Length: 345
Image (cartoon, one colour):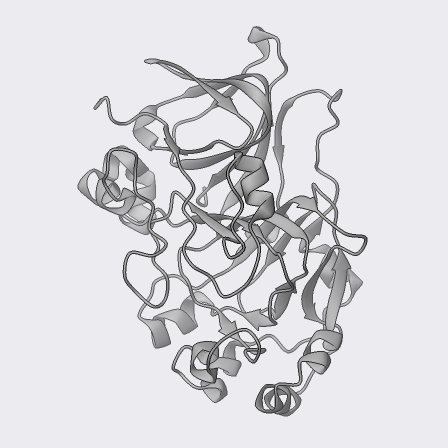
């Protein structure tokens, strides 16, 4: 097994964005804050929609991660993954710190993305809430009532942001909550919400509320026109029962609670990605075993050790790590809490 196929610790990767944020990312990583650094694309083989290298992860040895995976897809991804997804990692993970409210937007599903963006993947996503600031940390998910397509077109034409936002469910969140956002669902993230975001590996955001955020409506509809883009928007009503299928509450660990592995996302995420919290106890005999497979690790608290057959590395709050399939089984030990993000099973 090549020696290079070991877990790799990654620096921050913050492509330019149109909105403010990043203080919470800097605090987690121990870096200097940037006013417009609200997203850290972790272990990314995905570029910005505008093209070029923005968004791609460069490994510490100078290679692009995308090139490393293409050069050794079996070593990075394993045969079962290759049979389903080819040499795509099938995953993009971000740290996202909303320094201001994000605009109301939605994403295409796989079928729409194939037809209009020549992509195998749309963009279903999910959020694991790491932190919040202020007294009213809120995300917005789905229309409260079924809304006619004509009404939505009027809102977009007039850039009636208050009506768009008022039509959505306002969902208060606290650290440890998780929310799945299916493709097509209108949504926004409120100011002061800091999440780990898992998503399909694309940068397709169809932005209904573009004025005040983007330079032109073309950036909002990605060049396909709003009449076409809105065809994939979910205009149905999401009542409390439907919302409950997207949201899980309160998975932040009590420091005195037992450790182990906790699945974090609602079952709707299963066909797109997986996320779990790994929290070994500090006793060496209580290490958590990670089975072989491509994964992205985000250490969110404490410090511990990540060990493979070829040795161990310290892992502590703020570290982000990409794990190739070829690294084999790993052991996580010590007083550390890690989010493990993976493609679908």
